[in-house]
Length: 399
Image 1 (cartoon, rainbow, N blue to C red):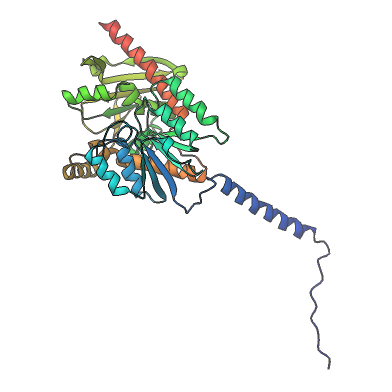
Image 2: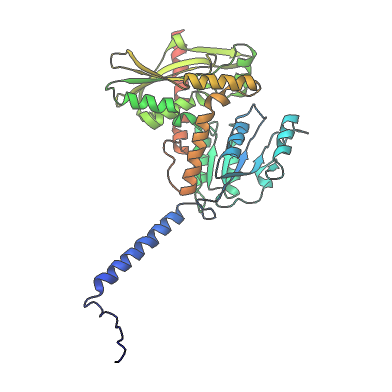
């Protein structure tokens, strides 16, 4: 008996639907692969560490740059490749002992340099964090972009004037591949701000007051604060709250109806020839009728608040920047190392969240949520300059 041979089934009478389905699936897969690849830095992948260059480290335990460095060194998926310190390495004959010890502890895995110009060109996946003096930041940003930076975390307020920050924006957009610039306004991601805004959304007609406190003493500490933050309270301390007004309340110079200063909570001082506010409180109202209040006091402690008041003006809820447990932990850390600036302990979690969002946005090509862009920074600086003039005029008229 002969061996039976099997035969393949006959082809379908009309293969077009099958070919169309196969082609559509292939196109979809290729499109997804392209979008996923093109939205992140070309030389990076989701699993490879992102290289970071820190500009402006400053003194250990005292400078915000040092705080950023400590957090970056512990962040997953991030590798610090260089620290640029123009002042301590580029101006002084010899850096302080504390900085030399930091340098020795991180070498040779982290390069230390006096300028961005002394570093090789950056890879497409290099994030640059600039934490220089406000007056130096414009040139530092330009130098970073000249080295090939495509994403920069710029410490607030970014520049001393609106014109300077607008020029920095134009430079960031002028390259073949534009550079994304985010500003370090940590309150944009602070839990107490998010909670207050969510609560206010459930209370029709409510208003929000943002209260920002620092813990300077009224003697030499305040004098040093005036000298170090020569741009003034509104461009340095309360600029955080102005960025919140821009982001969440659509407050801009061209949307403002009025600015009203609260003289009972405002103090303008002149210390060693420098005039600035030790405290300032004002309410803004937009043309659309939205109101919000900002109160800043440089000598009132380390806690900040967001207060929501009902339409009748009665306080409905108060949200603190730290829980009681977080306050206890910050106090414990302060006792363990009293040389560390207190606000590194009280605001460290916010700054870490901010950097994490920027890193994720750069890696994926996506957005960074409520993190301030350079456009928000420009609008906040415009408000700072406008409100400074308005408040100063109101105080003068009252005399």
